[in-house]
Image 1 (tube, rainbow, N blue to C red):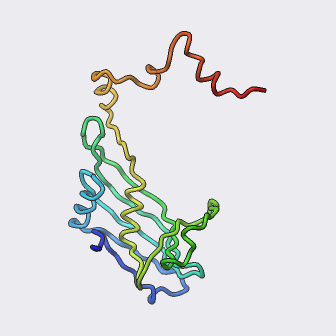
Image 2 (cartoon, one colour; image 1 turned 90 degrees about the vertical axis):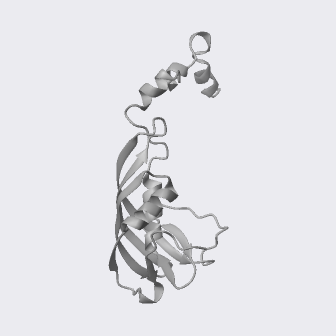
Length: 177
């Protein structure tokens, strides 16, 4: 397996019980490789400020990921600049530590769990994936609606049934009393 494009390993044996702040920034080559991997036009900036701490259940990582990226509109292919400012709340656990087949109820304060193996966690890969998950998977430019309309694509409003069938969806959704 090859190393991720933006790898910032943090050795487990250097993480103490106290919280430690870690700031990471992707360089130009890493940003270009990540842009190719995630299908982006470019990544202008990618950085993260993270608090890392050893806990009983694993390594807790909290903080923020920031990025300036350019996505391509899925309709017009026009570039769309996007700013990401995403909170991070992760718990790295040793591979096989948490029962992977178990169903777990998560509350609002729960951390996303990421398994790791070996003697390090990768904060760079965690930041890159956080950025990617924060992006709109189907970005649309301001011109997208006009291009779709000119191509004959109906909006949801225009595609709704009219006349005798207009209320059928509402009737089917009603439960008998």
